[in-house]
Length: 253
Image (cartoon, rainbow, N blue to C red; front, side, top):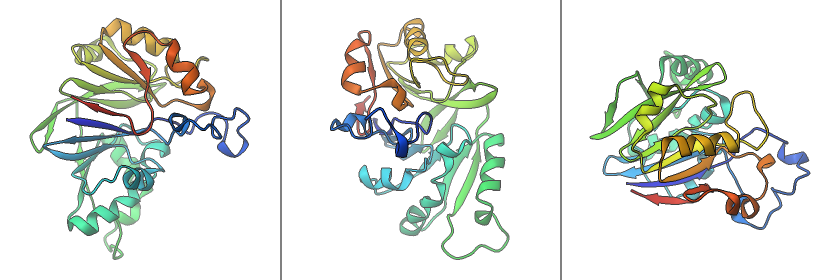
C-alpha cells in the first residue's frame, strides 16, 4: 500500500491574498500546502480521503487515472467542496463513485450538492453513490478500514486506519477507547494547525504529546497553517520519528 499526501495545508489562518508571513512566496515546494487530503493506492484501487476545494488539481498533480472510492472525514467545506469534480472519473469509468461518510456528513453532502440527488438529473452532473460509515470496520474491495471517532471542538469527525497506517485530521480530542484503535500503527498522521492554542485543532505540542503517548514509530503532521512557519525551520526541531508532512510526500507500507 502506498500513501500519497495530496495536500497538507488548511484554510485556517491568514488569507493567502493578504499573507504577510511569506510562506506563499517560499521557494521551498514543501511550503506549498494545498488543503488536506491523502491518496491510498492499494490492490483495492485508489481511495481518496476528502474532496477538498483543490481536489481537481490534486488529482491532476498526482496523475490519478482511476478512483474507486472517497472517504469523508467530515462535512466542512474545506473537506468536501471539490466533490463536484468526481464527474471526470464518472465519465471515464462509466459508473458512479462510492462516497463513504457518516449519516451527519451525508445530510450535508445531499444539501450542498442537491443537484446530484435530484429526481431530474441534468446530464453530466457528478454520479455519487453514498455509502454509510458506522462505528464498525468496513471493506472496500477487500481492504479493511477501521473508522476512528474524534472530536473537532463539538463536531464528530472520522479518522481512518488502514492496516498499519492511521489518518486523523481536524481534531482536538480523542477518547481513550478510540486511542486504542490507533495503538500498534506503524505510521500515524495527525493534524497540527499551529503552535498557539486553537478551539478545534491540536497544536503542534499537543500533537507531539499524543504521538508520544500512542508510541507510534513514525508520526507525520498535517493540516498545517501558515502560522506554523517554514518547513525547513520547523521540521528539524521535531522529535525523532516525527516530521511535518508535505504535499507529494509518499509513504510505502
